[in-house]
Image (cartoon, rainbow, N blue to C red; front, top):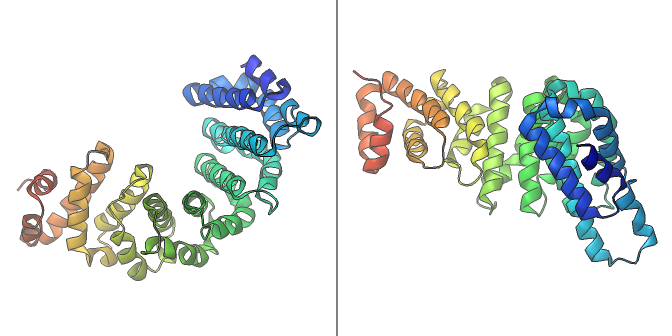
Length: 328
């Protein structure tokens, strides 16, 4: 670890420094806080130096005649690797990361200025989304700074920017407490186009579904469920980003098991969705069990009325779903 930190600060090759950052992230990811704790202050200082673009590899730019395009590519690789460190610290430390994050936030936000390319903005948005996810409630203090940026990025012409922005607004709503509530209407308005035919990217749509799911789970009373639920269900099952599965299907399952009237008006759609999920080779057994519980609840409510819906499914899907039906 000492060698990696020395490399981050002193090496003049951006690719080598980026690799050192990635190695640090991998070590902390594998071993958690125990790997981070002895080197915490040095790592934070090195990360801060890189975010402020004052490390050795960043200082040589003005003295060299490196091709601009080539150098900007090296910059992108380097800053992606640096920004990936913050969520790793947050995951290892949880809410304890808050005072450290306070020192890194402004240097990070510098990359969102209009003078920076769009990929810098999405790098920051993705970083902040994961910090919010891993740090939890202390992100509430940053919602007013981050949410306007993420809302703007929802309308980006670049699919990666839209995808990261959707993930970010969802995590801010989930972990931002009352600070995020005032943005709910704007978030729903910003997400709405991502559910429509005009959105060409499945991963963007999956992340938009994940954002809505997180909002419903924390503040269902602040969501017009009669309008949102049909649009939400229409884009399911998830097509590409199955990291959103737990959030999305937990939400659907919770609404069903609590007999929410807005979702119970969609029983045929739910049966079809649940069959897709339990028959999917990519969904985890944990996700399938959630969906299975929700299906079991539907059977307990509607009994024999479910049978015709099962008969309309492909046999493999019907059999997979029937396995979750309560035994009579």
